[in-house]
Image (tube, rainbow, N blue to C red; front, side, top):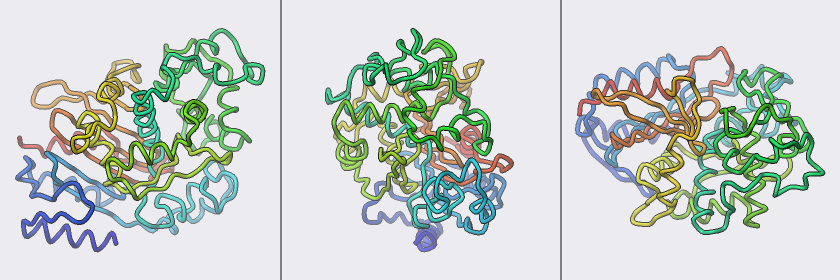
Length: 391
């Protein structure tokens, strides 16, 4: 299927055609007509194809509502990660034939080796959108609601004044104050995520962690925080997170082809469980590019979109990278002006990136999951695309 689509794209590119296939949103166009230098864009694509950025599975660039570049690359992940898939370790969690063996090619990066690609932590950005919809429908509590109000404090470890002060907003902005270390590679057994993954209850494990500081003061990446959000979502709405997303987010934008894996406890995995195509995740990014509106319908409240992509906490001391409501914010310069792109970021190379001032969405997927592999990061992808922009 992927190879057939490449042939279709090649013919349309060479012949200057712009076919719109069934179910597609954006027609294909000549990159030059969208303000790109074809040779510079082609050089970037060639670098990807030659492996400069490791295992990249796709790149998709949409500008002014049309596709400027769309490429898919095939990798034999069954062979590439064969040794790791059979070796117990931090990324081979529970049953090695199951969905939490990250080297198992039946599950990663494509679901059942099909077209649905694991989004990993880009799932967090999608969950944020779902929460925004629920807040707009008055079906989710205010962001300043204390987290412990949804739990029995007597059944939570290490409760103190700081943990009592932790709110839903802190879960959204990765500023919980919890003692957590997800900054080392996931292959490192000291990574708090990998310890959580083998615990019997992921939500309880995260909530039980001691506090390292006051909530709201410091950004500390914490996947468990989004699992708590997913748990709270079910408690607050009485509806499964996936079901709510399917009805109120996916259906309005025509996203029908997806899979959402579950945690061992049965919850929709809010921190990394979503699988969609590159065009599928591009729909979410495009929705945010357009302020939450899709074909005249306001799917995500515009106020939530705006708040989601405004800085809530600095990731780097110089403010070059900041964080909103599960969206990463990257400062860059274009044509002498300072601009801000926002993106989802997922383990292995998943990056839906939005450049609002250029009316552009960039999507990359990949599966570089060992620490010594090169990777196509958001800032590199932005820079390489900007080099190709002529107007």
